[in-house]
Image (cartoon, rainbow, N blue to C red; front, side, top):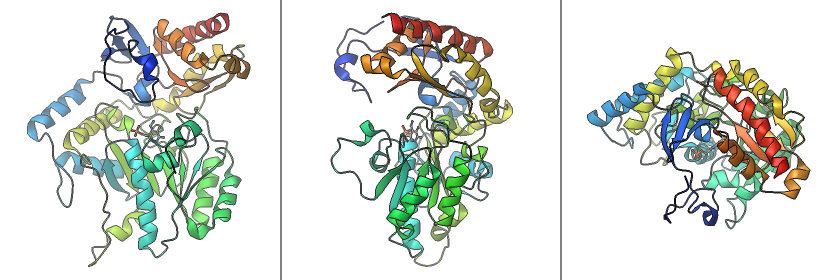
Length: 423
Ligand code: PMP
């Protein structure tokens, strides 16, 4: 039910004039479902923002968080201070890492880790005698959070523009063309390029799957030119692509991995960065005068967030959740088959991981740029939550979603698309 009271809460990515009085207030969650303040139930095919991988209301996570709050509710990680959940989590995350022996830096969320990765990349080159390597290349349609460097790396133009001068030394290449990356490295000069940011499957930018061979090729190009390959797996990790980190679906060795979201199934904010041993090495020598990474957030390694992550990893392991992201990719594509060839639809992108997008037909979008918003609304009326995108919608249900829930999606999507054409 729409709330009638003006409320000062300012929402991210929202037209506040339209939001106030029309908020969708979520009051309760259980499994793959959430309820609004009118008591209506919805299948959350968006897993909130691609993160409720285990669904809602996991008693194991609640218990772990409660016990941690009772034992040590908060403490920082600065200098040599540690806490048990953070130490345990770092060991586990490193054990699972695509590059053995990776070091683990913790933070507050995905954007925090992206900015951390840029600073670590540049700092690594400063401390290995190549201070001119500062340039960062990202991909069109890429999304790397909304912090300073993530905004400079943004491949969705609307997110990158309008903030005054962007951070220096960033450029972009077409998301689907590995040769373009090498051309850009050569144009800038390999002696000036520090890092390449790559979501294995681009998420917020439209669920854009990498062409065959793309990931291996860009990883090899980075290696050839001593450019750090940064896999931004904020969405793709934690089973979304059927593997722990997402990038480990391919046989490549990322120098840095950024992730967040599903590491706690979204229950408590937590960001994770993995640094391959050679990248971390200058900071770990123990030699007098060795460089110190003068970077990190107050809540890095917060014990309650780490306890939530440890409990989440326990469930991923115990219930063998991670491979479901691959096992469910065909059922999800099948569930959206009713959108394929629909007159309102330009393209359905699915088949790599448990995420997919429906892009609306260009003539429909030209006639009505609000069509994605209407599609979202029609699906809400069907009892299904999807993620609205600039050109359509994305779905990324909880990894614990069942066949009956995918059937619900399969039935609702063609009906909502039909309504788009009628209204
Ligand atoms: N990188 C990617 C690939 C993301 O999808 C996101 C968030 N959707 C971020 C970074 C930013 O994460 P956060 O919103 O937690 O800052």
